[in-house]
Image 1 (tube, rainbow, N blue to C red):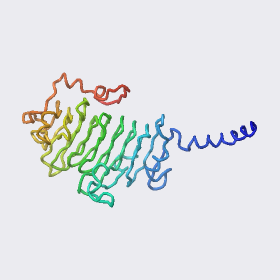
Image 2 (cartoon, helix red, strand yellow):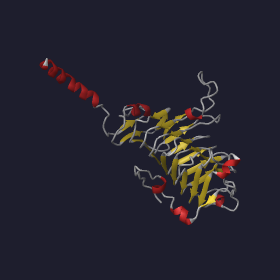
Image 3 (cartoon, one colour):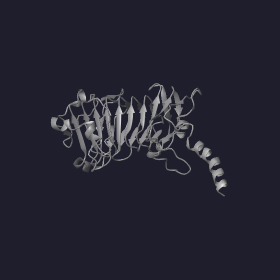
Image 4 (cartoon, helix red, strand yellow):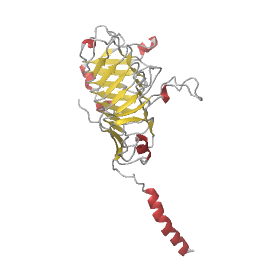
Amino acid sequence: MKYNLILLLLIVAPLTSTFAAGKYDNPNTLFVARDGTGQFRTVDEAIEVCRAFMDYHKVIFVKRGTYKEKLVLPQWLQNIEICGEDRDQTIITYDDHANIKTADRPGGMGTFRTFTLKIQGNAITLKNITIENNAARLGQAVALHTEGDRLLFVNCRFLGHQDTIYTGVAGTRLYFKDCHIEGTTDFIFGPSTAWFERCHILCKANSYITAASTPQDVAYGYVFNNCTIEAAPGVDKVYLGRPWRDYGYTLFMHCSLPRQIRPEGWHHWQKEREQTARYMEYENTGEGAATDKRVAWSRQLTKKEAKEITLENVFRREDNWKVTGDK
């Protein structure tokens, strides 16, 4: 009996080792190329081979091309970086919108199923890539839907119309640096804490840039620092934001605001939210930065208050996550 047990262990051990160490269970970069010159032809195929809860940083490098994919980075994936070869020529795109009717959803699929990319995992980075929802303007159409924490977006483009970026979970931390974001209505919306550094924001319709739904017990919502806001031709009436829920928090500081920003700056969405909305500005420039006609329920920060608005303070948690940013 003892001899048989030893023999069985000798046979099973190498098989177990083989299955435990997958071909891609290592920090090596994965290469995606639509033209077939990489290891994978789709980004989804590369995501599928990544090990759950990796404790090392793994890069998925995506060569120039247009990838029509509806992607999910599930919550068990972490420490993944999706890096495009060229920001403007590496495009992940899809075309769902909220009013598409299906057999199981005859009333329409709804906003929160329309994403091109949904990120549920933590510690995910996107660099040098475009995420697009190119649906016709027939309803809400999300390009980026986030649920994870400690997400970084560097030199990316986010293209869409209504609801381009949905920051979907309260308290999660997102950092956008040197990104281009465009849309029509409420095209940056949700409850997360997000810092936008040196981003270019393009308003493509007379509407609202942000629709924060920051919970009352979360200290910070959206912070736009050193950003440039522009309006497309024909656009002449843009609000900085309106609160999707009570206590929505949005701050624009050191930003360039064009003449198309309405003099009142902000909209209450519902009259009672004038009592709860946390809307602020500090040292903005440009023709749209004049403060003399701003709504009475918004605020201009004092110099002392503005000094407290730092990456460290906004993102502070017990995990001591730190982001390097230019201040």
